Image 1: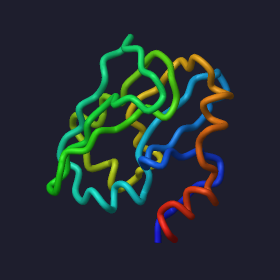
Image 2: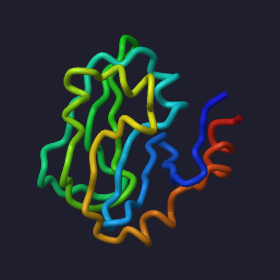
Image 3: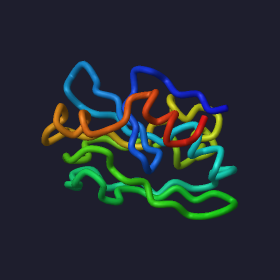
Length: 128
């Protein structure tokens, strides 16, 4: 059974988003996603300064099973990436909610986050 933190918002494509106190949004993949992927071996990070729309591919996670696009759950500009994933991509498996992938300066955080699922809604999507 997947861990689904109540304070996060989720996309149906299994990314999570957390609104930070400074107004930025941190993005990663859910516990369910990392379980489905298997052992993560490489993460292609977006470039800082890249503008993304909600639902656009922003990153790629490669596992022993497949390479999967990571979609931005909110629109905005990439302002930071988790460079530690270059040396330790497996941290997405061991700590999917601590090992974020990128941070955005959102265009419309409230509007985009309101369109995402809460923990209960996401639980329904993954069937747990």
